[in-house]
Length: 132
Image 1 (cartoon, one colour):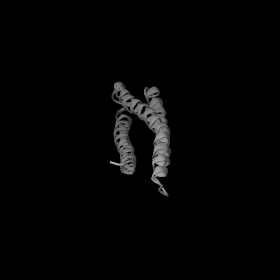
Image 2 (tube, rainbow, N blue to C red; image 1 turned 180 degrees about the vertical axis):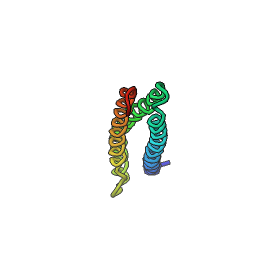
Image 3 (tube, one colour; image 1 turned 90 degrees about the horizontal axis):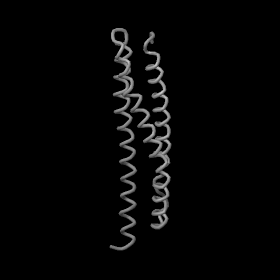
């Protein structure tokens, strides 16, 4: 196998990996918002009868902090991934390559939203003894 063929395979693998990361980002968000929405709506609906129900908010709070950190980490790593794709593009003398900054921006935006949700869950958790 010659160098040109190896570069093409690596390029294709990187493009497929980029598509996989984009898909995984969307799936993470769908799962998170479905679980968080269900838990928060249940807590808000049932908060009068049970004092312990407020602790259900700990799960979305922890999930949002973990996912936020994970997404920031992924966004930071996308810089190296981008450099690799563009180095292969140059070696193959191609005109264009997928710009993975779109995924980086999405990861940072979602991480920021996760932080806001963690703050919101924390506020609800701290003030759950009173009326929402």
